[in-house]
Length: 81
Image (tube, rainbow, N blue to C red; front, side, top):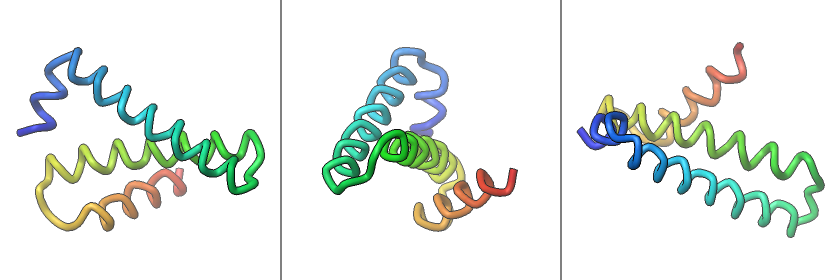
C-alpha cells in the first residue's frame, strides 16, 4: 500500500528520489574518505542507491521474503543484462 501511494503522488515520488540521492551522496563521500577515487566512488554509490530503491519498492509491493534477498535478486538482474 505504501508504495502504491508514493507511485500515484508526484510530490512523494520526488521526495523518495531526493532521499535516495542523499543516500548516494553520503555513500560516495564515505567511499572517497576511504580512498576510492572518482568516478568509481560515485558510480558505486549511485548504482547501489538505484538497486536499493528498486529492491525496496519491490519488497514493499510483494510483502514476502527479506529485503536482503530482494536486493540480491535486483542486483543480480542488473548484472545479467
